[in-house]
Amino acid sequence: RKEVEQDPGPFNVPEGATVAFNCTYSNSASQSFFWYRQDCRKEPKLLMSVYSSGNEDGRFTAQLNRASQYISLLIRDSKLSDSATYLCVVSAYSGAGSYQLTFGKGTKLSVIP
Amino acid sequence: EAQVTQNPRYLITVTGKKLTVTCSQNMNHEYMSWYRQDPGLGLRQIYYSMNVEVTDKGDVPEGYKVSRKEKRNFPLILESPSPNQTSLYFCASSETATGELFFGEGSRLTVL
Image 1 (cartoon, chains in turn purple, brown):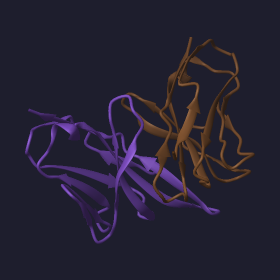
Image 2: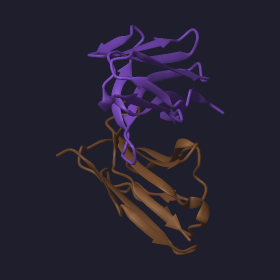
Image 3: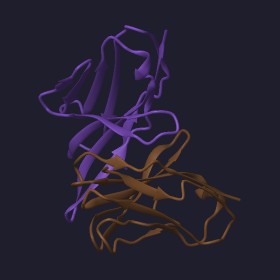
């Protein structure tokens, strides 16, 4: 079974802190990688895609390490509004033109005043 | 406004009473999928569809059916619901299977 593993947390950090989440995946044929954010009782929303070269969007930086099969998300200068659950998502080709999406169970972040 | 619409948003039903959760998207997306989310288990894929008339099983398809007769609609059918299908269900769509997923607001189903 193809797995995506995340530390469930919760991560409780003060405002302004830097926090990092890791996610490991077992399927070496995985091709696309994403971080989604899910607020309590709401639907997940794309935070950012993760590219081999790494990518940054404001305070958020995502990295991919294919050799070690993990992706990371770094949040700098945490805001109260960053409090949410962060989901790691991996897509892999499953044959016959189909792709299988696998979600991690999520890492809960609470930013404290 | 681009969106994925699920109905009903909340439903309480009894064991064995067939129900359908509708899902519609207005973005002309080819890929659509259904997930259930349970505490401690995260989001698990039930079924997905790469295009019209093409559906495939996800990780937890037992007890569910889907159809994709039109591009915009992807209903989830529970022929004979059981209490272990009590869950929060999300429908999602994407331009491609590897692109950004757009989720509906979720349907909270309780089976007594």
